[in-house]
Image (cartoon, rainbow, N blue to C red; front, side, top):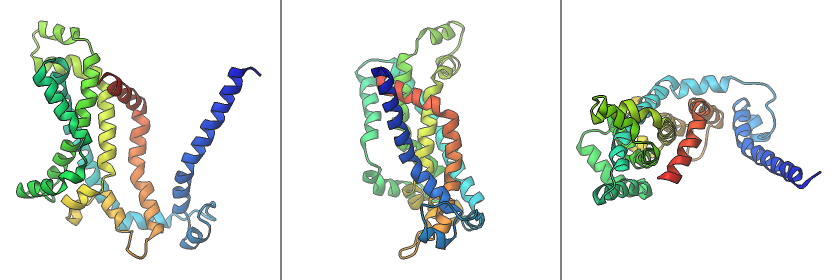
Length: 275
């Protein structure tokens, strides 16, 4: 056996071991959803003795899952749409212009990536409350859009700097305005960046706990993470409902990730290298 073949086998063995390590938490959570409370306490890592779908039915009812899923989908989809619209439009001139003003604006925007949300939490709540946007869907959408905007501009600008100007110049010659030339000639070729922005924003919005806890206190406007927290008590945690809730909440995100994964990798790589 030559050295290259031996190295390949070692690398594959390491990758299989790493995949196994990452699979264990997923197996643990899914297996626990089908167990009785006695099995969860006595045999947490074993396969369930029988498949108990009662846990899922109880979780669906207790969480009011269709309502919280609809709330989460509405806020996430609206935030992603706003972020793609305003992020791409803001990044376009920042990527095409190269002078001190635009360079300063670009650095100003992406500096927001390094600012922790906790630093702005108190003044942000006062500002949103003064605008009467607490307990409203559009208030939450505006907050998520603003928080994720620096990352969106960073990714879009990285992609746009690498795209040729000839396409938009041809659109101008054909009579398009700058705005129409952007949507017709430029925006379609930055699909990987759009997919990356969409997935990253979806993940951060879908899994967020702090913003809905602070700004969506009305029970009818709660999101999935807040309803999951209902099963966690100070002294007792209802594991038989918490684990099925976690599985139900991750299924839509997992489906979206599997559909867009090749664009995610391409977009992150291009944004980090060319940005």
